[in-house]
Length: 81
Image 1 (cartoon, rainbow, N blue to C red):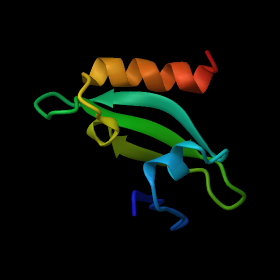
Image 2: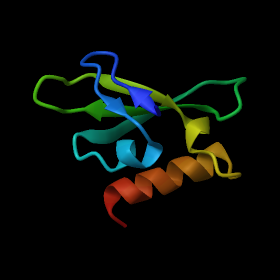
Image 3: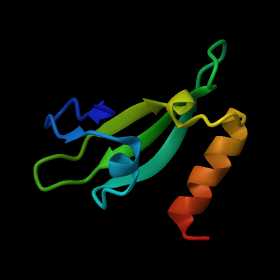
Image 4: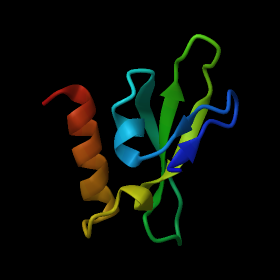
């Protein structure tokens, strides 16, 4: 399991399933100093019975790049560029 919604208990088995869910949108980034990965990506879960914000450690999206590079790639993907 990749992530479970703390509000409605929806489960995403993989990172890909989570990122491709039309009900999950990137809404921000919360920096956390002193932790590899640099912080948390904040996603809004907009389903019929949910509207919570889900925090995911940016390190979960690591592929050997820096947290800044990862964030830029995710924002670019979300904006459709």
